[in-house]
Image (cartoon, rainbow, N blue to C red; front, side, top):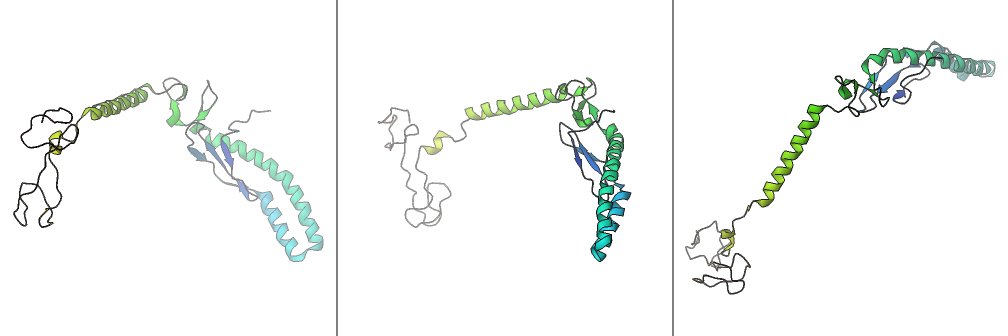
Length: 208
């Protein structure tokens, strides 16, 4: 008895009217579909079923006999169609001699003669490692960068003028009323208020 291949990585799409199969790569899941083959026994059975529904009785019994005969014949046709489908798609897959998986060209290491699970592509792996290292290096550098200048927080940042309520866009005077924008000084280290002219924070001692 011949060994049946592709027993675990296929879908059977066959119906009473014919036979068709899908075969998949064991690694990535990409698939190939065999050509549809019609079933003569399925069509005969279908005709008997139609006659039985219309007339019943004797023809109904005939349809039942036809279905039983069709079942045996259909199974035989199905097995033969499956073998032909395997022969049809076999060229799209290679079997790894180490793990037994059937894989497509995408998942096959041509140089090593094994699937990529057992013999990863060296260049692809090195490229991925290099990319991971670059990302990690970027994260480490980003963690050491002071993205917000401490000088920006040495003074109170007002969004609106305390006198007229106009929106402030920076500067020492309000663009609407012209009055000075109140800017209280705060310690950049601890955030406590610091009087103008003071060189060190009275709370934490940080230089101002």
